[in-house]
Length: 75
Image (cartoon, rainbow, N blue to C red; front, side, top):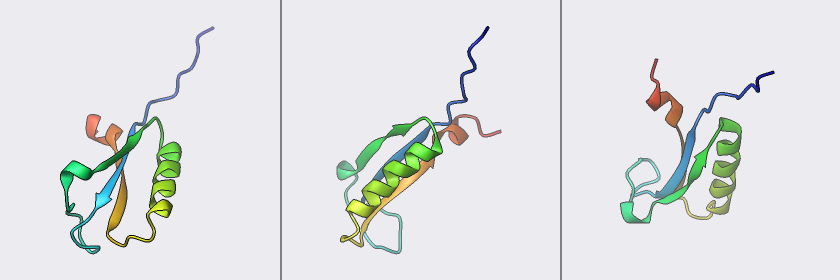
């Protein structure tokens, strides 16, 4: 019997303070908050949501989820 291993759909969660709430340019790249890499979107979303809610008082702070698996295998 073989174990079925689910596909690793890696996602990166990171954020930082933007120069403007309307854009996506970071104020200081050395201060980016690398939250982590997660094996699926569900866990990445949970991490993103926690960070986004914790920084809700700062309109310039923004967190993102990057679908790393799509960059690794674009087809």
